[in-house]
Length: 566
Image 1 (cartoon, rainbow, N blue to C red):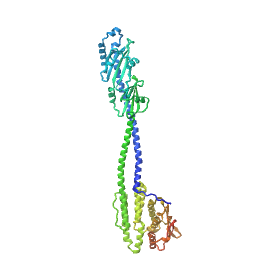
Image 2 (cartoon, one colour; image 1 turned 120 degrees about the vertical axis):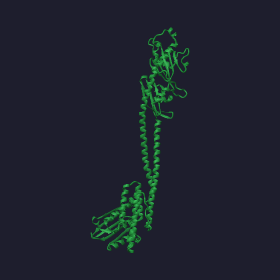
Image 3 (cartoon, rainbow, N blue to C red; image 1 turned 45 degrees about the horizontal axis):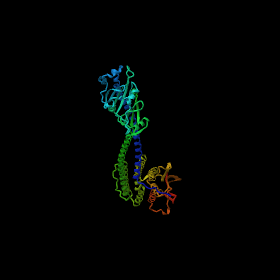
Image 4 (tube, rainbow, N blue to C red; image 1 turned 45 degrees about the vertical axis):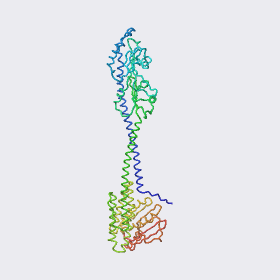
């Protein structure tokens, strides 16, 4: 049982095609843009990070060289160049020691404000100090031998050593406001003498030094000693975060996900600088590009939708105008004309339609008014040749082909329709069988646009008969009747065959279809096409025969038989 498909408006179909044709390119474009930007961002970040790390390492190394010079100053003090006996030690003028030491420090960059504390000791006794809280280092009976920095210096003679800062026990944050530098000073004249120098360095100068390097990515710079112990970070970090970094794990801290992107070693001081960058920033940048792309796409989509809606209304207006003109002509008003349209193809179609109406009107007035009988016969023939519904359906098919982008097929159909109109509007009453069949080829091609796979046609003719003259538009009414009354009501795919061949001395024109057929007993004079063919055959050739046979469910077979010298 045939179940008709649910009909959908042309406007809705075009909208679905429009939506799908924009959705897929949007997904591809936004995906490619986002992916390309992310790759570019990661690549640029890698290059910029390595450059920044090299510059930061160079700056830190120069900074440590300055500190190293300060720790070397005591080597030039006279106290550390000779052996002192106990009496001389007791009678040593403290003021003279400090004066000489101050002069030596003045030759270095000691005056810089990042030097918070400086303490020089000998055998556990404070010999020189410049400290923020000097009572911590210098009070009677204090030998400082239990201090961490003192033990570190004692175990590393003649080396500059960095002492890790303290960890805040309350929140686990590593103190990055200062770090300690110590050195054990060897007196070659008295190797039993234990001398040290301790510097507490404020990191503000180091922060300014690194901060002058342009780097646009959120980052953390970490300085560690040879034992992987924390010395300094450009941002306050927690102890747990530092442990994860040492284990080469990505770790979230302060709402950011951090990753180590590079390391550099300062071999002179056995230190390592690590650079961590925020991966969250890369995700934010990629998300931002994605959202911007989506915003631009939706703006363009909105603009395209308004353009599509306007164009659709424009096309619908042209179709409505053609329908109105066709309805007026159908009702006998041949004064109806198409308005000018700003679409070239549609305007050409409108002008051709106007010319067809003018020619039809002229034929009715000038030719078919000659005799009443001839007028009635020819008027029916013309009315059956080109029906307004056929024009309307053809125009609708043209619009649909244009909307779905079938440009080549649309162009082919336009040419067929143009040839068809020119053939209909010709003034001559006779034509060759070849021209008539070419016209039917165009006519059937346009009908196939409407019926698609439901309609197939075959047109054939013996080569020797192509130049035989017959009345123009003699076969078209039979073909039109076969399509309208036989093929259109059928629920199956139908075949229409038009054949021209010789049978002995006769020429036979066969029009055969396997449509629904009909009962010959019900055939009446309201079949305009058949009546028109009979009347025209009688006026053209009184000996010509018109034969018709039909069966319900089988189809209809029409024959025109006439004698003609070839």
